Image 1 (cartoon, rainbow, N blue to C red):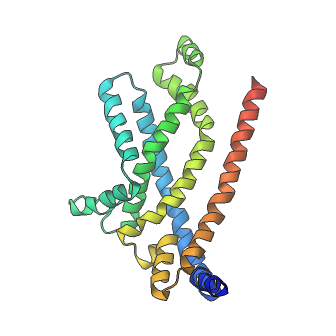
Image 2: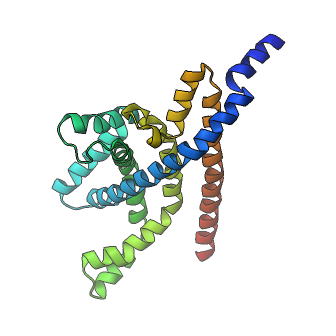
Image 3: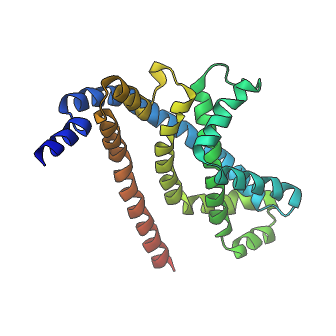
Length: 239
């Protein structure tokens, strides 16, 4: 029994390998993971808001392609979409970022998240009371003005907690970009852990990566949950 426990400790929790892995993960992997997550989230929010507006359009020629985008990007496995965009675009001659694999990774994750954020934005925008829009139109505002000054500010504010929760999924999704072959300086947490685990023939680097992911996502998860509870309590008090 003790031999089995020692083997598990050596395989997953070797203190020397854990410490050296954490050094590299914190210095190189953590900044790249955060930067990649932020870039992908910004792309996702831009596409998500645009697609959400299209989903609410009265014209079927606008609404239909937006619905197709959401259904396809939410239906495909993330790993397949990242590979198709990150590797497929350059192979097809669409080298919009040249040889910068990092940008393709951010675009791929951003497009995926755009499909999920589109539904979040749509729910938030549609939650704005119709009477407010009608009142704005009565005051002489155009449809565009009512959208930008009345619906958009309220809708976005109501979906901030779920959007923050989606950012947690983006952080975990960055672990899939190892497929694209990032350079040494561009590697995120999982890429570094995987390479170190292969070189050391030990899984302790992956354990270190898991601890770092948990250090990022668990506090954010509790923070988002507390934020949602506070907003719900505030809305009840207002009513």
